[in-house]
Amino acid sequence: MRIGVPRELDRETRAALVPAGVKKLRDMGAEIAVESGLGAASGFLDEEYSSAGAQVETDRRQLFANSRIVLRVNQPTMQEVSVLKEGTVHVSFLNPFGEADLVRSLAKAGVTCMSMEMVPRITRAQKMDALSSQANLAGYVAVLAAANHLPKIFPMMTTAAGTLAPVRALVIGAGVAGLQAIATARRLGARVDAYDTRPVVKEQVKSVGARFLELDLGQTAETKGGYAKALTEEQLQRQREALTELCDRYDVLITTAQVFGRKAPRIITAEMVGRMKPGSVCTSARITTGTFRSRRLSSSRSSSCGVTIDLTPTSNSSGSPRWREPVPASCLFWRLDGIWLTFVAPTRRSSSFHRSTVII
Image: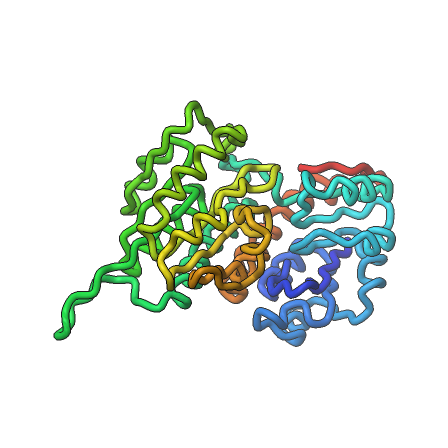
């Protein structure tokens, strides 16, 4: 069984497989082919893959055409779908809710797709949960970006010239990314407040050292998977109005809010940013799915009313490739382990192979 791993495009610095993973897959009996330059952006050379037992190829189209399983971080392009053979198993982040045309194209091509976003949050699948692990790191990177741009230090510090007050930070969204952002900001010495539409996370926020902001929005809830349920337009407006009144208190504003399967709520407005103090910083761990409402606040890095808005670090979840690298690669490896037991082992006993598109 041949597994092909292409190099990621569009400034993506992560790779779906590292040399250590190649050795594990080889031990399982797989043949591994990787595209030249697969790990270059995160510090892994082609020679390391070769030494681990992978075949390094330069022809991308041939890599797709000759692989029974394709392993990658991001979704394929329409052009790449046309190269995949019927019966190929494609494993990656897929964004199935936002890329319906792509999903239909894969189904028409007879490709079996396994979307990493759809891995359930259960004990058995914990090792495959790339979504949570990447969100964890996104929250961390968002705080480091804010600290880098802020023209003051995070902790309170007493000097011979006087005492410097600690930075005040507001984290919007207290899921996996939000809790990590809170913990990181606290470790740097900031005073942190956090807000989430789900009252159930109040104790979690307090446990990592932040104060929980409670806004009266009426009835709110969360899904079985732990994500916040979408607010009504009236609730969103009440939320924006309440947060607008609070924004001038903070030096740093970090947004991490996420609604599973939908675009993130557009919480931050130009009016909110305009009320913040000059020199303040806004960062987001969820820029790919929304959060910033005004178009002029949606560039990767800009300045508005003296406030720095930096959305670059987490725009594609690859702000810290060397640290992130083993995480998605490990999750993808364990997903492959499940595929091997489900598809490959039975295939060795039978000539048939199930050919249909599934999103799991």
